[in-house]
Length: 252
Image (cartoon, rainbow, N blue to C red; front, side):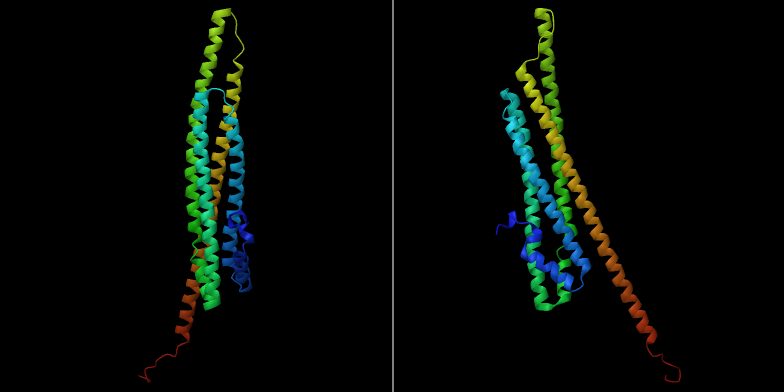
């Protein structure tokens, strides 16, 4: 079984961990693991879509007639490809780490019981994993945003070339001439490339915000649980102190 091609929720260790957590009434821990599993699967699907769109766009850029323009656009496609690949590697790394952590948690449960299972799940540091992904997606969105700006500059330059050709035509024959068909085709491909880069940047921004929201939600859950445990511990101590026999003066 190729782990990278298998849905995380279908990995045996993940399925077993979720069942063990559910069977032992550890609903908070089960929910936290489910959150990360669902998020990673969603990110895998989004990155797969980006990769497919990237390949199609790469083929389009290859059709650009002007060699200089094609080279500049190829650089932008290469940069986008690198960011998508980096994002994919981050998600795969997070996926593999979660599988390893699931194995460790199951082993801890079998050897030391329920308390060890809870400790092992908390040691996964799921919010931190989400923060790592969030930061990576943010960098990718920023990089692609710069590529969009660079491409806008190229499109403006190409527009100036087209305008210059039309003006030259007016001077030579006294009326506007049709824009060079090759230039028009190249402009169309540039427009497609800009849309692709812009949409990909927006997707990364959405992935970043999603990771941030899930991380915050889980951290709030941890803090709430920590607060409840602290309150229970305090109330138990107060109750114990209250029920303790008082030392009377006579006894002294």
